[in-house]
Length: 389
Image 1 (cartoon, rainbow, N blue to C red):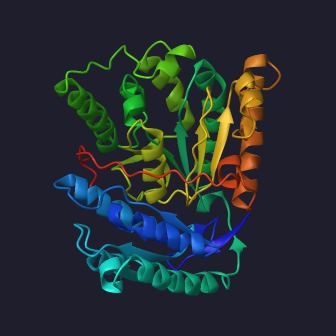
Image 2: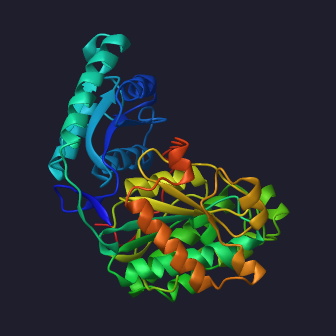
């Protein structure tokens, strides 16, 4: 595999110039700038203003860490000029932790949206020209941070697709890389299993903390999620309870010990299998892992889910042969052989790993080829882990 070495030593598998909005009021301008410059991609910010407490800190953490994603060569920050995230302060914060190229501008300083679009396009074009001079370098699985997610699940997800991803995850961890397991909502009922795999007692405690903390927040809102399943599609696909779904879902993490538990959008401090405290909503979960430094993500879906991401390729895996045939333009890998008895989980995992390596080398999975750039940052209050500094 070949990638792009960044100043911090990490390796990207794409070479994007990021046009990053710092608040909802700047989203259209950021999008227009990226649309005008081939090689630039826009990432919107739904909020960035009108937030208090941990919500604004989550937003700032994610905005900073998105610029650090190895798939990003450099960034143009686009703000309105009066938002809570304070674009110039955010830029200073980024420069403290990164040597990547960074430009910052606000619509108000430019004197309006049209001037801002023109100025931003000039900045982005200059960064794209610089990015084109970066030569690709050799990389291995040890350089990889692999995100995992499942959505639109059915009974085949836990029987075929997720275990095949687990084989890939174990291979990445064995090579010295990092794998992210998230969707805390869908860990409920499996916390004892996961805690037993904690590399330390502190990691085990953090697993209980995020799962029980989330369940308590549901209870405070009058919702009892144990034994329930909030998704009609999951139930129609043969999953009777959230716990049943979770038992299949955690197999995406393979069999490796859990090295640490990290907050939403945080960058792992340790290699190996990492649990990120993400919500069950797929787009927010994938976006958090992107902020956490994942260069690529494998997404399992039994019913069929088309979402992608602007910064990282998203590989779609289904264990449902009918879904693969019906939604072929959205799917990348058919794991139904495990259901039909024509392939073992290990064989499927080996084939999926080969696909992952091809994607790292530049092959475009369906969501990337179709230009799907779904993105949303989770900004609710969070349960802090004891492992945080």
